[in-house]
Length: 274
Ligand SMILES: Nc1ncnc2c1ncn2[C@@H]1O[C@H](COP(=O)(O)OP(=O)(O)OP(=O)(O)O)[C@@H](O)[C@H]1O
Image (tube, rainbow, N blue to C red; front, side):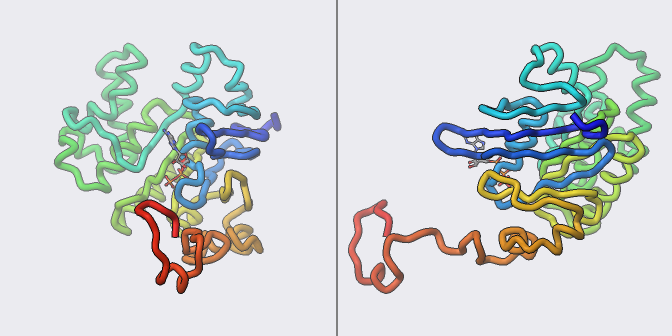
């Protein structure tokens, strides 16, 4: 593995039954970077995150994280490695019966036996970093969507992870909250000396904080580079995706057996393709 690569995938194949999701994916994520993974819905981005986190295993290829080959790790070593990873999902997934403080404290309580005073310090430090120390005593139901996402961010960071996965962290937020979350992702990544991998459809916000990006289509990486390189990509697929164009290499129309005029006059059975 190259000296400064924290995550490296080589020729990774992953299928669900007969459906190939990833077809020979290779990528290299540099230590300290924020890297975005983009692509059309259902293209395998979340699958890719799960493979890097070791919660799914590929049918072929290699995945190395922090110099360790995930496929050769035993359960204990994989568990220890995964403890050094943080995750933030689209739905903040806060525990509704726990206060903000207890939500953020949860990973620490689960993995360590800490004095309450130490735990309190660690939790409040992370809540302060996301601007919500004052909300420590609130319940999740009392938070706005943006606040909830910030609490989830504090929880994802509370163990000082080396690697943080974000799956659609901006979805469902107003533009101000999106900007706050994006800024926090960059700031916390740099303050913790972490590496972040970000799946998002929000091209503008993602490119404002990402150092490098990959675009996934048809199970393969079809473009990669800095945000500027990707914006200037001559790949039609990349341009269609980044420009949000409804038609292009990914067609607007679901494939049909007949042309439109024939379909209007034809007869067909229920469920038959027309
Ligand atoms: N648990 C599962 N069982 C069966 N198929 C699945 C499962 N999870 C995902 N898939 C399929 O794998 C493919 C890739 O899904 P994945 O969620 O990785 O895509 P994605 O790019 O993250 O999509 P989106 O942007 O919509 O979240 C899809 O065809 C999806 O239907």
